[in-house]
Length: 324
Image (cartoon, rainbow, N blue to C red):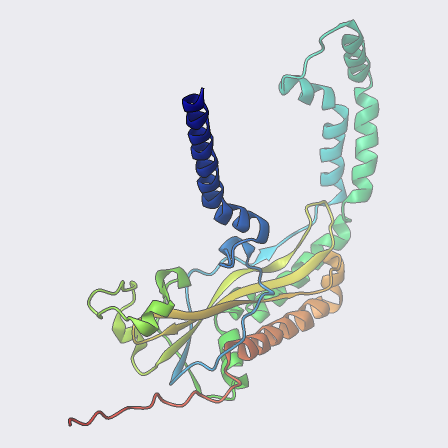
């Protein structure tokens, strides 16, 4: 009996030690779940989370990078278009259900289906009446569209963020900035800078190079690159929704020496929302003034967040080592 008791104690002791080892192995996982991880994820990043700006070093070049998306103009539906859509959607809702496989399973549901089929004209009439109020008058929409189209052509809205925005940044920057005529890819083509680059830099021949020719960076030390994410006059989905002038750009600082990203941020502008015909009033004067203000606002954000308003950093001190 004594031998069995000692054996039971040894088994219990081993189980207890195994349990301790298991819990100690899980403790880091519990800590991560409880307190979170200190490393930020890209999915957690928001455009309003702007890091503290640092003055870009050396000579600065300004350029546009990546493709340019189309300016998004959301045109409302006329009352006739909205009425037709709602008449079909409400009056023939039973046909849509059958097409999607929603079939009656008993006599009661069959009776309801028959009633809905009999009320098709009533549903079409009700939907048409609602649509007539949801859409925009054709007599107002056509001249408004003409006025806005003319204003967009005169303002060159499609190219404004690729040309005018760069000129405004150059004008508002306290530091000299040279506009580059070379074409550059999007910021994803340039590798991200890390702390290892500062403490243990890789040889130049082993670094991942972007698709840019080194000659594209000739004459500059830092490239300030702008890419348009979206721009347009748009709003919520609907027949005649209120629309806002929106612009969003991505700004990236790239070091010319190794074509690595130094930092990046977003700049965006959203105007108060108005109806389509209100934007086109008085020869589209509200749209013209808001567009000019939006581009100016973006330029100011870029200058403030990129560090162009700060004095350039001093050159790195060179240490001279004397042989004993």
